[in-house]
Image (spheres, rainbow, N blue to C red):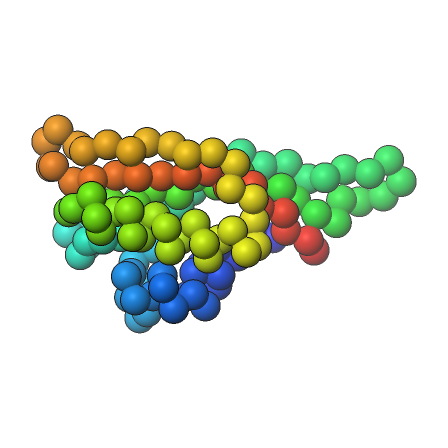
Length: 121
């Protein structure tokens, strides 16, 4: 089982309008391909655990995801952040807001948030 973040985002027209469709610029493992067009977003699993029961195998897993947006402008980073938050928020819990900064070397904007996603078998 894995959190269905890609499917949820591909089904959201506001996300695909900003990150494309084929391929969507939403990459796993917290890393995007080199020289990818901006804006883009990455996600990674930062925590997780099965929801255990005394009388049987867990049927649901909880994934803690970190989502980060990278863009050349603050306006673009905010737009992607908002679209992703709305799309993902239909299926998972937004649990916190992360970094909101400009990289001192690349001058790219980065904005992120954390998610708790329950995935049933």
